Image (tube, one colour):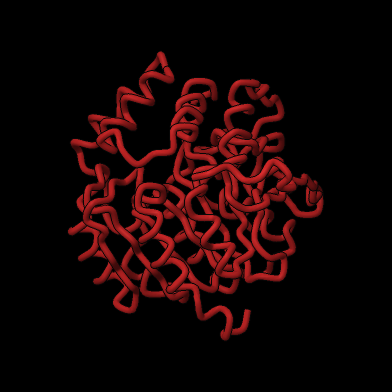
Length: 329
């Protein structure tokens, strides 16, 4: 993807919500997730430079927003018309919000106000400089605070991988705030991980955590194709340079909870996904959400779905969300 003109404005703004809400994490005990901490480790300069290099490749002007919440300062990369309908993007583990570089141009051109969030505690520019998150309620409360800080009462949501699980849980948690929901090869939403995948990925999280190990993992899972080289380098740096944190997870939503899902839903699955069998997930998703649109992209892998197959992904997303122009916000 070509880099934007060097004159493209990239502005920064801080939105302060800290102290205006109670601690949504249920206390400062050790949470099981992207945990906040009063002692925040300095982010390595090499990582920040790599992050900015990927963000510079976005084909649209970017407004860098820092949203203060009770659990920390959250980075949101915003683009698209300010009066467009909000679309919140939640990335997969370790991907950072910059990983949407192949999608944001089409989404902004379709009239969306794109709000790409760096998950708190994950590699990125968000800083967990408040009390720790405490499990799933803390994670969802943090996202409540982010939307409040942005002044967004209701939005469309799109999540990839782990971000898909967060988006689905948030739609179940706050149905009035989620207009439409798009899930890109979501994990732990309709089926568990393949045992063989867990065995393959385990060494990645054992010490020493190295950039070379992260690159081998990406290449194995994608066949070495479809990833932006600058983003690939950023992912590897994040894996090697950030402290290991245990992501907030919970059980898969039950059939009863999924029946209560109010938001129209799109599920895009990667036919060559490593974490799960796409055909099985498609069957289970259609059974759990009979009204959902469920599509398998047969040549896509889990990790390269948003980039290598951006044209298909963007077409499905913009078609699914298109009626926001005539439907009320």
